[in-house]
Image 1 (tube, rainbow, N blue to C red):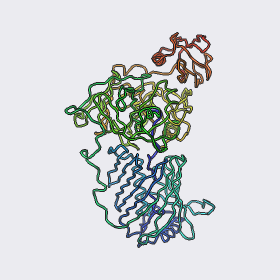
Image 2: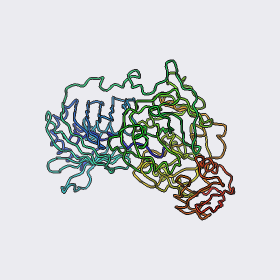
Image 3: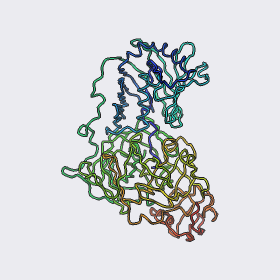
Image 4: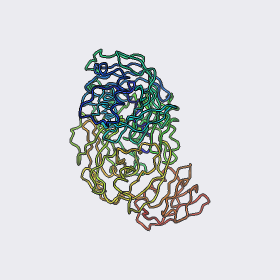
Length: 622
């Protein structure tokens, strides 16, 4: 949802830096500038020379990693020809990331096998290429020399490696000796520095036994210390093979002989957010379902009450920015006949988000259930069921839509905006809006030019920020066309999950809610069947207030410019104690959400803190 996304790249996101990079003989077709070539030659000589480098066939590294207040073990095995296995164990969190030829997979902290996301896949392959020379050959990368830079009081020559997708790597080299201790990566608009130290010679090749990675968000910084490095020992094939289904961790269980739950009722809070009744450790609780959450999340107060002790300070990236989260083990949930766990979960103080949402969020169930089960969400009829993948025929209702692997277990899909070529967006049942489009895609396609706009206050994990609101004429998904779609245009870089140049946007519940949606990740697809009200007008904000719940009142956080609320004189900080004469209670949102479907010109009354009933004439304003 608008919150609870993990930090970009996950807990372990550093490329494996072997001193700097190892190099081989450059072929004649190398994409290396004439200015860069002499510097590469000097650097290669410092690394150990061509003979030693060309003799490297495999490399096995063992050591420790410190990140996010956690410390544990790290091992990396690399093999020339396209294989790499990275395994970390931080006690409360562990995982594996593997490149095996064309295959790329990982084990998430709860032990599930996932396809590696396309961006992490690309980054891992580049790391492997740099260990076995391809980038210094100019293969799949353009190499140039930039002006010298000063770093740590020392002047460095700079080699730039520019990749086809726009990512960059800068290698800082001493022009006289070829020595290098600093690299800078610019990935998806973010800058990361890696400092290599404790340089030693192993089989004639210079390796760095300590690497410090420094990020824009300090919570993502990490230090790797290698305790051993073995060259050309031979690596077993089974190190890299993807585990079969029979060896995967069984985190989700149905009673013997049962292959699917019964239909379970949903509460579609604000007609968007999926709330289910379940239990945590046997204690009844509300559970919010969020396919966009990279890990299941417990509100800190809920975790404390359940006696679950959290450790660490992981970077948790939401649409509002990045904050810290703890980690707990042994989380067990129950949903109808389905038992979930033991899961590894994040813990966060969700109270600020709960106030803005107007509803508690004790548990956010994330991607794990979507990877383990077929999830059948019947939005129009407010019900859900979970099926064993083997029991599902693979032929769902409506039309099939392919999903693609995204980073950290998220899924991506293709959709068309106002007749433009299909764009790739992330899939997020926890985003309350219909659609959010990201800055790079919006600017490249000039989508805001000539369009009536306003502003709204958006946020989640990490805080709040203003976002531009406008209406798209058409959005097409799996061949289904939706008209007049209210859309958020993310314009402000807050270091959050939406600050990416590699995706066009984020698809939310406002569009998904028009369908019965079957999530079948085992077959890389969704099934979409339009509901009876598919062609009805899209719900559209006709008021212009962002509020947060404060007991028996709603407090105005933001008044949209040009909105009916602004015209009626509403101001930030004012309190609302009744809607249409009804005091603010747990069902206040039903009236509020109903106004999104009202006709323009509808008159409504909101009671202020001093008892004054203030009339607002509802109307679309963007």
